[in-house]
Length: 61
View 1 (cartoon, rainbow, N blue to C red):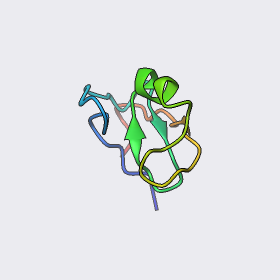
View 2: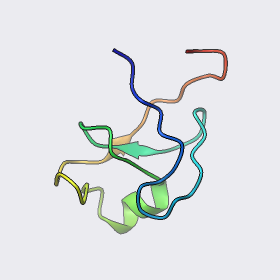
View 3: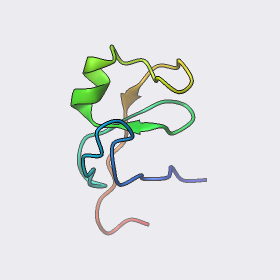
View 4: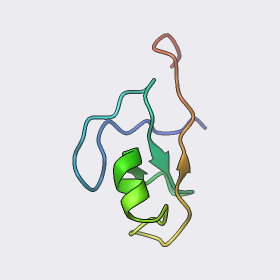
């Protein structure tokens, strides 16, 4: 099952592109790199670690 590529940071609302940088936890909560850094790479929803989300080329599904 592929990752859900959310389109916006859950904290600040910044638009996140599929081929751009974003951070996710194991539950796929999604944040921009700036918010992730501000939160010390800890998800405010579940307390899990935020890691870099893999990028998806525009041609991939």
